Amino acid sequence: MNTADERDGYRAQERPVVGYVPPARDPRIRWFLDANEGRPSRAALAALAGAATMETSRRYPRTAELEAVIAARPKAGYEPLSPSRVLVTAGGDDAIARACRVFLKPGDTLVVFEPAFEMYSIGARLSGARTVGVPWPPGEPFPLEAAIETARSCRAAAVALVNPANPAGGLASPEVTEELMDALPDTSVWVDGAYADFSRTDSLAAALSRPNGLALRSFSKTYGLAGLRVGWAAGTPETIAALRAAGDPFPVAGPSLAAALAARSPEGEAETSRIVTRLVRERETLYRLLGDLGARPYPSETNFVLARVKDPSGLKEALASRGVAIRAYPGRPGLEAMIRISGPADREGFGVLARALRESKEYL
Image (cartoon, rainbow, N blue to C red; front, side, top):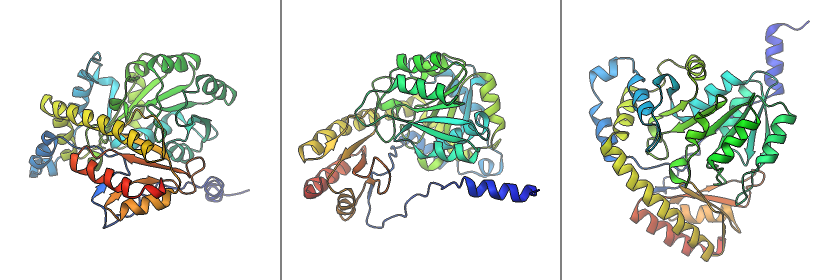
């Protein structure tokens, strides 16, 4: 009979996990438009600088204040929540990892929508679960019937709905989100709204209206704090208590919490609203420009545009030589011919991007 160590080693070999490895920094790049990173408000930056104190450095950070702020105003126009329904995490990725630990056990199934955000499959496999993909191609409506049928047929423990989708950019309405949750009452439905502030509609209220719903959010896109690693999750008090127990009790550093609190202040929110408006404008302008230059851009409800081009690797290098980084997907099934470009939220940066694309038209 095998020993426990031998069995563990066998399991690790049977289901290897390939981690997400960020690309190395290219010294030619000034405008990083490959990771959908937002732009921080001046209020957040000032708070970050002011948090560099001995007291902040020596004390364990407390997330309760930020959780209370988020609960009181999850988003403009939304009803307040009990603080017991909110958990602050180390970015959206930490929220995903905790959800996988809580809801997935070895042998379970997580349904995702392809092309899918990689962290869901990584988290599932680390929990000993598998992922089953439902196609949601760029430019196509959300596949509600296929999602329900797939989740039922494989008895899925959870469904991960990135809404709006990354990298495809599509959107499922709040009504469709509710239909999905209602059709799968025994399945946990995770609604990842990292890009929801750039979309026409937001499914946050829909996700929180059902006991099987879990909302996941990030400060990386809307608030431009990707480098500080702040996110949050909202659900039933029981779900949030389980997520809290599934990770680090001090997940976010003190200076990061100070910046996030300032970002959610009236001053910070006002500037962030202007930044989001600029990014949506840039997205629409970029969509038209790519189409005019011969690419096939897909409609997007995010801060980026996904497009099919003639030579993704050639375009990526051509833009890098002009100081602009974009995302390509070599070897990724279904995305090999695609590129993804984020908005810079900056007039100069968008001008540089537009010129670089025009000068690289042969790759489009």
